[in-house]
Length: 248
Ligand code: BTN
Image (tube, rainbow, N blue to C red; front, side, top):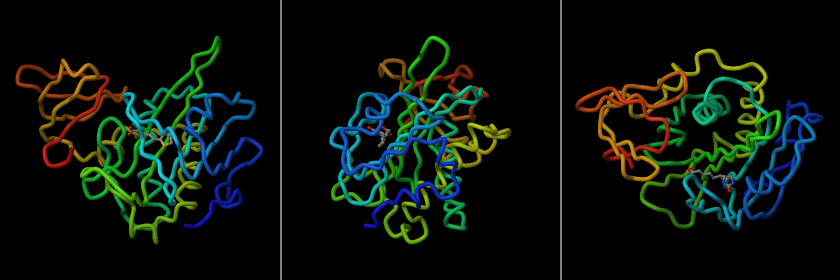
């Protein structure tokens, strides 16, 4: 496992804007970042392992040591586009950029990244609303290699040769910072192009599991909400996740 260096992580970035924490271990990079006041434009926290990694919907995020990515970036955002979808898109694009080829990691609504139909990256977005702004805390977990895993979890594995961890982190940071400072005009089209379930049947799982809906996925709207053609109507679904036969 190659140790991450400040020089590599920051290459080409304006270091004066960023508070960087490169840690060996931490409970959760999101929790750590939440507790730190934003005195520069960005806080970036990266750890080699997490003892209490957190996933979406109160789930745990398995975070053993061994060359995976556990990273959080904290910032203020006033862009209108839905951050949760944009971040997955920017990570997928970073993978193509640094590998120099079409890795084409696919996107699964709202913000999972898949390679060969297996989840290799999860994104947890939290926010803190203050008197005059909203701070976003964006946690990214990317699995390179796991000693044990569920059937639907994937790994970067041998792709690590063309997706080295430090370069990927650096490119993801560059993409996110560029987006925050410049926006992303055609993000919706770009997201839909990389989506793995355009036009196919899926089950939208609601947060309370009670209002699940089956239908054909018709894309997203400008707010990143799911457009689902059910038997009776075109439904707009704003939260939850989705389940697809043969994937997860
Ligand atoms: C998901 O459930 O898909 C989201 C997983 C997010 C995991 C990352 S790892 C870095 C950051 N710190 C955490 O505790 N969680 C996120």
